[in-house]
Image (cartoon, rainbow, N blue to C red):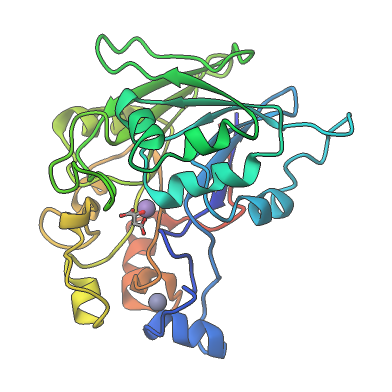
Length: 304
Ligand code: MLT
Ligand code: MN
Ligand code: ZN
């Protein structure tokens, strides 16, 4: 299985259009050792040269060009995606759907809650249905046996309900339901290898930690270093946990869990532009190198 990180940034990208934080400012000036990054999304390339898209970011067109998605197309108009799986209904993971409206049909997989959001409070699927056919496949969370994307027999998905947050536009903001956010366990049935993907994760339960220990690679929420990062940088009033993201540092931070895992390759994704790990010469980045935790970047390829 070949996985490509299409976008490794959190919502807003890096640099963010209106942001003058220590990272964004220095990236524009060329005085930081760091790469720019687009918004959160990964894709899996299939043997058929088609793809499964996981989260549709507002940067999807640019990401498809730079990751050469659709370079094997054989007919005059071809949708390269056999399926599009959504982990939540946040804007950074769904706005890209609008940019895919030119095809005849989009085959979408998401939980009932996410599909409901996208048909009501943020009715993007309703709007899209005037442009193309939308097949809405519900990801079941009860008796979770896993699911497959149509026409793709060798990749198995399992979705786990996780604690993060519902989008700011949702009635369930700050009081999310199971199904508002999922993590995915993605298994290649041919090679037996597996990947755990959770770009938005606030609570690492014992069950999740066990799943993470048994996979070959994890791509996990690396949004911020400190819980009060946005406050200290004068950007906002919200703590990371209140937005549904576990900070990397601190006693019960993401790193304290990742340190316990011996088997998987560990990669951070959904990195906010304020996070000091983006600066490759920062102490925080050096700490990750010591822990053998990688900072995901756009175009990063993982072969499993
Ligand atoms: C988040 O991950 O908390 C959201 O994507 C934020 C946003 O949409 O800007
Ligand atoms: Mn996000
Ligand atoms: Zn910034």
